[in-house]
Each structure stands twice: as C-alpha cells, then as structure tokens.
Image (cartoon, rainbow, N blue to C red; front, side):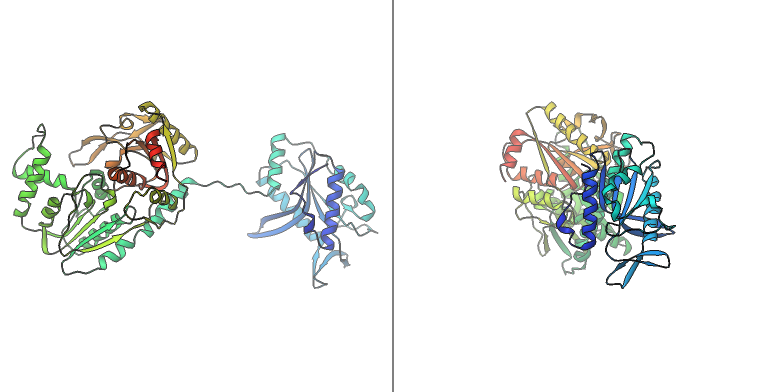
Length: 545
C-alpha cells in the first residue's frame, strides 16, 4: 500500500468532482506498493515574467526512483469547443482550458524543482477522467498520458510505466518528499529578534522623555522615581540635549562608573558627565593636592571635602541631572544642588527598588514628585517572575512588546568549579541557539573582588571582556580584550544586554538588599534571562513562588 500525504479525510470529499478524485486516490493507494508516495491537493506557486502564479495539483506521485508524476483528475461537466477540452464550473458561467491548466502545472514544476535543488528529477503528467471515455486522439494529450473510465482498472500500471528514468540518490529522494509536503521550515533569526526588541523597547520607553520635560514648576526641582526599564536614561539624554540646544550649561552625575562611561559615549560632548566620587576627587586634587590612596579613609575624606566646600563655588549650572539617586547620600545631593543657579532646573532620577547600598532616604523640599512602575525593557514573562518573587514594593507593570520566555533557573552544588561549569553550560546553549558573544552579558551577583567568574580569562572557550580596574589618562575605564562581557551586578546597574546570564547567586536570606540585587540583575535582560544559583539560593528563590 502506497504512502498517502496528508492523511485522507473522506468527509471533506462531499462533491461529485471530489468523490471522483477520492476514487483515484483509493485506487493508487491500494494498487501501488509502499515504496510510492502520493500527495494530493498540492498547492504550487511560481514566478512568470515578474508575476506570481498560483495553482493546485490534484495528485502527485513520487516513485521509488525519485521521479514525479503530476495527475490532473477531471470529472463532472466537461465540454469540447473548437478542438479544446474545457472544464465547466459554476453552472456553465466559467470554464477552464484543461490543456493550458496541465501545461501550466508541468511548466511550473519544471521551473521550481531545479531551483529547489532537484535538477535531475523527471516530471511526467497524466490526465485522468474517471467518468469519461475518450473516442479520438487529440494533439494536446498523447494517449499514453490520458486515462479514461475504461482504463481505471489499469491506472496503477499506467502510472508505473511512466517512471523510466534512472533513480536519484537516497538523500535527494528524501528531500524531494519534504518538498512536496509543503511544510515551510522556519527558525527564528536571533539577531533580527534582538534588534527588533531593542528598537521596540527604545520606542516604547520614550514616554518619560516625552512628558516629563513638559512639566513646569516654579521650584524647578523634579524627583522621578521610576522602575528599571522605564526610560530614565532616555529622559536624561533628552534633558541634556535640550540644554545644549538652548546653549545652557548642564551636568549629569551618577553613582556607577560604567553607567557614566556609557553616558559619555551617547551624551553631547559639551555635557559634563561624571560620578559623584569623580567630582569629589577633582575638587580635592584642585584645592588640596594629590590624594594619598594609601590612606584607608581617603575616599571618605574626599567626599567630606566636597560636601564642605562645594557651596564656595559660584553656582554655574542651568541643568543638573542626578541619576541612580537611591545610591546617593542626602548630603551628596544637597552639595550638588548648591551648584545650580536660582533659575536652573534639577532632575533627580532613581528607583528605590534598586537600592543595593545602605543609604538613608532623603527628600528635597518643594520638589515635584513623579512615580512610574512601567517597564518597557524586560520581557513580559521576566517581569511576571519579578512580581511573583515580590522583589519590589509595588508590582512592576510589564509594558514590553516582547512576551519572551520565562527565565530559566539553573542550580548547582556548592563550590566555585560547579558554578563556572554551569555558567559554561548556559553560554554554550545560547551560542548554539544563534546568539552572538557580544549579545550576552555575564552578570555576577558577587562583587568584583569576590567573583570567581571575574577571575577567569575565558568561559566556554570565549575570552572575557571584563574591567581591569584601571583607567586611561582621559579617565576611561580599561577592559580586557574579549567578546563576552562579564561584570558585577554593582557595576552593571543602569545598563542592559539582549541576553543576561545572572550568575554566582548565593544568599542565605531573601531580605530587602538581596531582593534589590536580584531585581537589578534580572532587569538587565532585554530578550532572555538565564539565572545560575547555588542549590540553597535557588531553592530559597523558587520557594518564594
């Protein structure tokens, strides 16, 4: 018995013509052996002189040798006009030239098969008329290629006789069967998906940058408490660019040096971009001299000096943007505010849910306060997990256009080697899916000094790009040569990557600080998140569900 594709649903053959086709299929299925494959209702399309043409082939028989026979089954009302055979449809209102139809099918197949990689496949054609008798020969249809009602009992013999060509190879035969199944094989293009998600996220996250600058207030001080992925960076850039366009003096200050480095790369050159610690160091060097970094208190001394003496400078700023405000002491903010002219504007951007350092909350009198819990960066499934873990005081609202997949959680036994091994497993799996090394960020739950990951030179055979801890003469951070980014959650705060492997997660208690670190690390991912934790931490985290 021949193999029929697809399986036959007889209830669909409820018209006279369809039942005639069903009879032909039954004869072929029963009369041909299992080395033959029969396809029915095969849709085809081809290009002809710039136009796309469509059609359907009633039956396609593929022989054991890998050659093809197209069969056009004609029943019902037929008429012969001016020597041409026509199929009549819709009570005589429409006709179709049978010779032209079969010729088009044959030509289309001869065109498509070589393009699909089957140049040696022979294509034959057979006209089958189960309820008509042919009384004479016509030029359009050789008798060897016509089967009428008198020959239905030898239909299979006639079919077999058409296959006279040498067989094609087994692999090509198998691929030919897949071709006729008309099952389009597609796979996601990871790079295209990443690009689409990034562009969409930027577009959606432009909301803060659109409406916040329009708010006017006599005090000109604005506090924006917005969750991760809400568009705070876009807002900051919009404010800074508008200031430059208005010929105003502006300064952007954050806590994290990598975030400052990123802002330097995207902000207008006229803007002063710095961390608060760098501002303190610059003032100290200018007024006191070279800091003594052998002193255990030198950083505290420089900060204290800035706080004490910053107000001595004449206010010079028209715009001050403070980012990562949850990591600032109140005294730092007040010292920076002293640098702003009376007519200047102050924007304080932060997110209390990302407070991974112990800081006292502060307030600025007469400031306009705005809250935003909309996350446009992270996949919806990732945000759902964040809310299930209750990592934030208020639920995060998923606004991304990318549903994504739920984060994958990997646990490993205690020990540094087990941790690195599991990280390598994740990286190899991501690479096999099509992600590029520069689309992946390895983010450690540990600090730089305690991270085993950041002590590695490579992971999964790929060199790591990681901070050296040194800076060039211009103050730019120096990195190792590598294509796979690795950094700590403390340093990577304020940044993002298409895929994040959040690793070296280990904690004893899911307290507020641990929740903040988890929230920061998880929300760095734009498309995909892999979580690698010790068994104890993983059980503690998943136990919160």
